[in-house]
Amino acid sequence: MAKKKKPFTKLQCEICKKTNYFTRKSKLAAEIKLSLKKFCKTCRKHTLHKEGKK
Ligand SMILES: [Zn+2]
Image 1 (tube, rainbow, N blue to C red):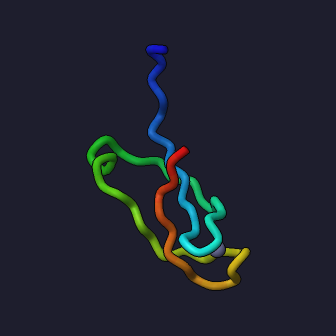
Image 2 (cartoon, helix red, strand yellow):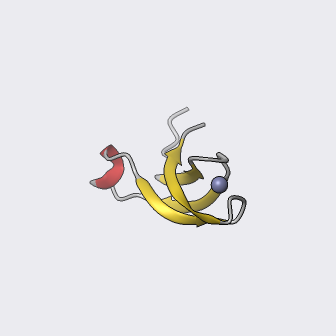
């Protein structure tokens, strides 16, 4: 299991927990927890999207 994964990050809506966006992190940003305000189709409004984990 020595495979290196590309730092892809899911952005999940904080309200409905739906994954709406994918983002790619740089190595520098990998330490920082992302939280962005983005439009959620399910909630039909702008909500806070946080990076999701498995
Ligand atoms: Zn939502």
